[in-house]
Amino acid sequence: MADPWLHIVGIGEDGLTGLSPATRAVVEAAEIIVGGDRHHGLAAAVSAQRVAWPHPFDALIGYLQSVRTRRVVVLATGDPLWYSVGAKIGRVIDPGEIVYHPQLSAFQLAAARMGWSLADVETLTVHGRPVEQMIAFIQPDQKLLILTTGAETPAQIAGFLTDRGFGASRMTVLAAMGGDREQRFDGVADSWDQTVPAFNTLAVECLAAPDAALLPRVPGISDDLFRHDGTMTKQEVRAVTVAKLMPMRGALLWDIGTGCGSVAVEWMRAARYARAIGIEPRPDRRAMAAANALALGTPKLQLIDGQAPSALDGLEPPDAVFIGGGLSDAVFDAAWTALRPLGRLVANAVTLESEAQLLALHKRHGGQLTKLSVNRAEPVGGLTGWRPLMPVTQWSLIKR
Image 1 (tube, rainbow, N blue to C red):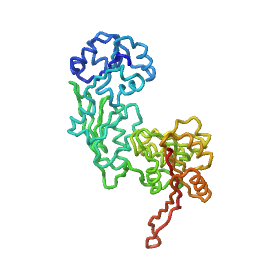
Image 2 (cartoon, rainbow, N blue to C red; image 1 turned 90 degrees about the horizontal axis):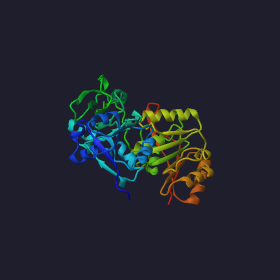
Image 3 (tube, rainbow, N blue to C red; image 1 turned 90 degrees about the vertical axis):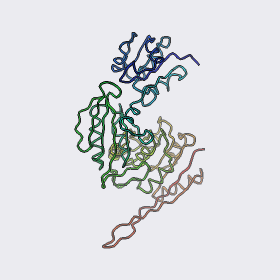
């Protein structure tokens, strides 16, 4: 293992004076300092070659590797390993060649300002990412700390809260924490009109109205929350389907025949950083899936125009596969071959022809067959009766 040559230093609004003596010595001894304009301003007293953030990120890695014989410092805000550049660099450059120097993070400072325990708070970032992804975390009495992407972000989030019946939620924007220019802006979502600095951290205390939309992270949210044309995996069946797909942090789902995207959206909502690729040949259904992904907090849902199995060629191998439409031996074979070890496959069938295919596949490969029957109470004249949904045959198995 090579000796450390790269120091990634977290710096706060108090600049060099806020660093420990040892960390300050590292910065002062640097030959090259890489950072944003704000970071360079916080360490202006140091004599070193200054390098601005290159774009794109891959260019930063290439530059760092080109100067590995020099004394190099990368400046980041707060904790370099908490939603920051340090983690990205450490995934490419051997961590044994890096020394990290963490400072108090924006989350820690914001929690202290709010008097909130970090153990009871969801910490999120929408910095440089779709703001809509925070929607999945809007729940009654939930406290959120959010790294924003600009001065307009708090107003966008206030709109999301208000549209979902959380307009009474309390919002606080904190800027320049820990420095002599620290500012605080307080308000309520449905009347938010504050003008705030571009670089800020947002604290939200979610307060629900009696008619607020309830969006739990567990699968099985109401069908009414999705745009659809009637052809979709219904709420009760969807809950079972996603449970058997077993969403996990960062895992990838192939949703074959994604339709309105209900399974893919619920998969992504159920686990942090879960990803999904929806394969759907109909443009109207892809449009519905994209709209549902935005509205329900999974804007990174990737949609592919195509028909399986040909549309599966070249895709990243999945951790789980759902076949909700277009089932055939060829589709199963392609998906099963690509599926990672310990991957989960679930296929649902509502027609007799598709059910016959599932029975044949089950006979060859094993797994679990389940018949799902759901009845919903609906008005019958002036009374109430049970109205059945179409029964679903479900086949599930794990790749061992």
